[in-house]
Length: 187
Image: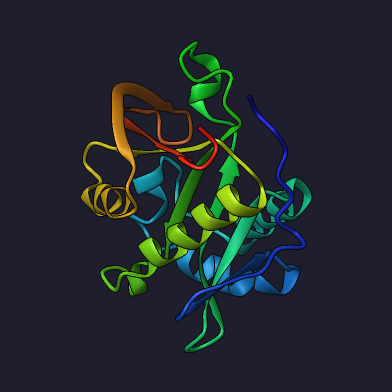
């Protein structure tokens, strides 16, 4: 079952990161990483071709209240995002009774390969299970996205199924690998 989660009052801290609500002043950092070709495309969206696109999407993040900005403590830059969205598991009989959210994330290409995303995802798992009392989290990656696959595996998710995802923005169909992580304390 889908339940709303408002991240605007939550601040999660790890050794190297702060996850917090987005602010309008983050727009330049957002555009800096979202405008790099290949970053958004790994998640099914077109890289931003203007700061106006970034402003519009940033406003939706702020209004929807379900996406964390990922800030690097080393330079105080916003280097990515991690959102909590409606899950595919809500539509499956086996999981429909669970309080579940889908996580989606993106990280600046300049910070890839440093172990930052598993650090961020682990903090969000703790937040969702310990503070929001969710029963499960789901996540997915396109079959060609090996970086995301490694993050998902490091964070303990279990593969469930493969499906297809059509990206309207890119006008492409992707093989989408879907995973779940159950909150053993609740089940």
